[in-house]
Amino acid sequence: MSDNNKKKGRFSSVPSLNLGSRQMLLDASEEAARSPSDHKLEKPGFVDEHDFVQGDEAVFYGQKDGRRIIVSGTINKLIESLADGSFIQDQDYVRNFLITHRYFTTSEDFLNKLFERYHHEITPNPNLTTEERVLFEKHRTFVRLRIINVIKKWLETCYTDFETDAKLLPNLLDHINSIREQESKELIKNIVKDHQQNGSQQNLRVSSDLKKTKLDWHFFNQPELEIKLVNLSAEEVARHLTLIEYQMFREVPKDEFLNQGFNDSKLAPKMQAMIKRFNDSTSWIASEILREDDSQERTKILSKFIKIGMRCRQMNNFNGVMEVYSSLTMTPISRLKQTWAGVSPSLKKAYEELGNLMNPSNNYVHYRRVLKSAPAPVLPFQGVYLLDLTFIEENTNRLQNGLVNFEKMQMLGRLVREILHYQTVKFNFEEVPRLRDWLLSRETYSNEQLYSRSKTLEPSSSLQSLSASTSSSSFSFSSSSTLTPTSSSSSSSSPSGKKSLLRMVRFPSMKELFLSQSDDESKLQTSLSCTDRSVSPGGASDSGKKSKRDRRDRYS
Image 1 (spheres, rainbow, N blue to C red):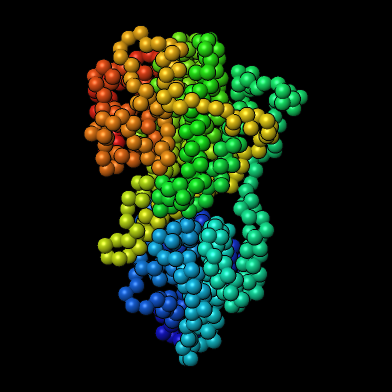
Image 2: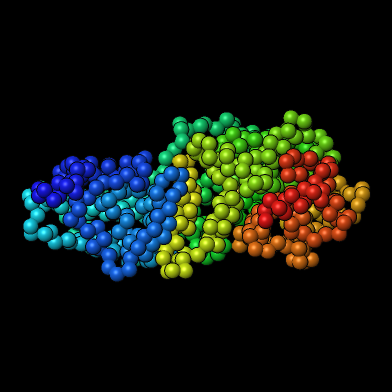
């Protein structure tokens, strides 16, 4: 080594790399998930890391939680940064890039650029010393192996990209033959082979040992015997609702969460099926209660559903919790004072706790806190994710200077990765096919029928009733994932801008934001709803002008 190079200290921090072990290098890159992203791996000073890109290429950094993250850049520089030899490979950046890359390029172009980067040759200076040549080759091999690691992650986490793009997989298979390291070549081939044989099931894990049913199999094997909800275990009903809806949830591919695809039934059939299932479930719960002519029998069914909601909460099925709670806050149910009067104080308190858990105040702060600490398996409430995705999508994909707005991609990537995480650990409950089929085949009333039936069972004794057209489910998704006021006169009072996103899920405590009613109607509607902090079924609410103004301030 020349004295010049010694003075600059070019090689003082170069790690010693074992080129004979591809796995050691891949394992080292995995360490990035637990290491600061700005931990430098000093490259030889004579290697120009930016030689891969040409012209006015740039990437810009910001800070998040004390870590340096990329917030914007040109496409080539963003791709170069996936395998930047100057830093420990940031696995969060890699995964976020893989999830969102189609916002700013095509998968085929991305794949071609990865292999262009892989094969990019830097001609070493003929005057390099022997030691410098060794370091030069180590660095070049290190970058190539990082690119292989990116492709490996792409296949493991976003294989649907290769299923939805007919040209992508053949293109990858062609490129595989050009990989220099035989172990890396076999690794990529095996991952592709596993996906082709096992599909998405290969990444699915079970939560624990199979939880056996407590139901009487002898009874359920006799089709002539009628199933009655009141005789069923709340735990078993909650288990089967969870199994039905978790299966639907885990089948929603990542692409249906991106580019606001969830608003389109053609682009997001799986997500739309979940939305429909949510609405059907809320209608079914209300219908089961109103099917009973006797108030005491209605009380039994209503109490049963509160217990089912409690069981869903214990199982971390937050989607089920919201279905139960939203059904019981529907006007046709919440107005049944005789029915609610028979519910025990302990169950009323449990119902309050469900309401407090799913309260939308402060951007669902309580629900988010509980969800974050909940152990797998978990079935999250989809409405909150759709709200978050909608807000993020309001940001542009490119900045005014033409750079990719990768800060948006980082936010989208983190959120979608959270969803995908919950899709990988399934509930392990024993399924009873007859009970599952019974739950899926129950008939429900329409919104108008629910209200009419409620008025017939317990006629109003005071104040003019609300019209049936404004008494639909208090919590429901529309077919386009954005609720619009059902009253024709409500459009004038509907919030605009960001507030309109709140229509995705409609809550009793927010009805004043959406409905334009007369004073008497407003009083009646308030008396039949729950407050922000507590639930008072069939009783008066203390929410008045001040709480209404506070809510508007909170969501503005």
